[in-house]
Amino acid sequence: MRPRWEWRLEDESGAVLERPTSPVFDARYDAEEWLGDHWRALAEQRVRRAVLLNEGAPVPPAIAVPAA
Image (cartoon, rainbow, N blue to C red; front, top):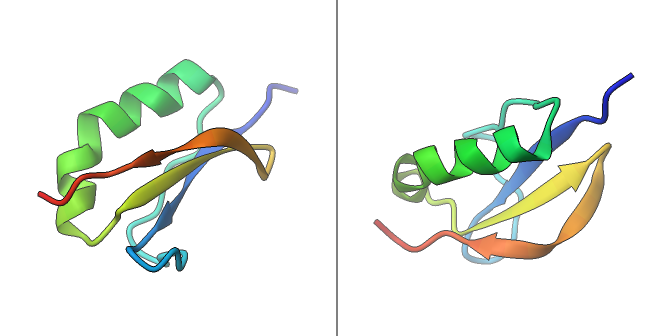
């Protein structure tokens, strides 16, 4: 089975947002590429930090999402 990668998306206070949600990816590269392609839309939805998760475990460092 391949590892699963996804993003935990947080607001300015560090609370996890229920929406938007991250897709689940088979490869870290795909997860990182998705964030790079969608950060502006995520910023418009109050996402301020993205934490990459591998099988549910955080993979540092967290990524700051600048306000749009």
